[in-house]
Length: 356
Ligand code: ADP
Ligand code: MG
Image (cartoon, rainbow, N blue to C red; front, side, top):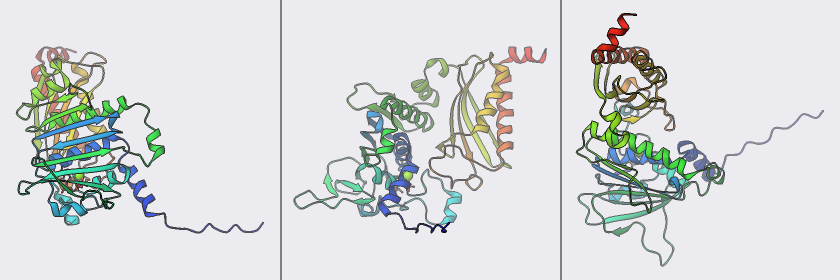
């Protein structure tokens, strides 16, 4: 048989490359929203409002009262790897803010219609800028300038419309907008519990009532009450443990032995990013098991600060699972301390346990 000739290799069109890359970072509306919330928190906002239409597929809008964006940065704002948060590779080791790759706005601009309205403390007016494929859209003759001056207070509003409009396969993958809205409410609720000093709201376009709402002055217990209800808010134990050698500090609010539900609720933040960690989840569940009736599970909010150079921060943005050094020892330390705390509060049960 004649040897088969290889097909020649050709570079993909840049527009295709960008769309593929964007689709890897943003798989669902909630992923875009997470990046936007983190940007608003990074900007020092004390108020963050989210508006959603069709589960975020039609409209995802986030308004904050943070420091805004400098007018001169608007032209490069949505380019890939442009950021105000990182200068050298070494900075990755000590990064204190959520974002660090300068990829979120770029990605969104490739797969949605993106409009940004912003005003800094020193600018005389607000500006509205529209982006496509990471660039400011060049207005056609007769159209208004872009960016264009508008009225607004200090802060930034990001409007994402028609997400995945140019990625039909991805768009078709969404069965129900209400499922996406549920994920959005869950995410906003997580940040609303975690971010003290920031008022959050989230609602559906056209709805009178809000899905999530907290005030900036609310305590952690009150924020938990707003999002997760009285039953759990009345049974919370404050928790804190740290270890210099392992380089971590954990703080949280966890349910006591009077409270249990069918499924564990874990609100986990590592260095202020909402993440998941199977070892921590499993550790917490097995620590609670002896204190709760069979099949009962706890509520746990935990904020873990780990020395930045010990966390693998260069992890892909879609990855909810993070890795860090001394994982096993840190989880063990947290669970030991939690076990003591639960035992101390629940004396009758711990007495029962020592009898068996
Ligand atoms: P990163 O957050 O990784 O820097 P992004 O693409 O998310 O990358 O954002 C790019 C830049 O845009 C940020 O570094 C920040 O300077 C600016 N920015 C984005 N959102 C906001 C906001 N809500 N308020 C102020 N600045 C913002
Ligand atoms: Mg960001």
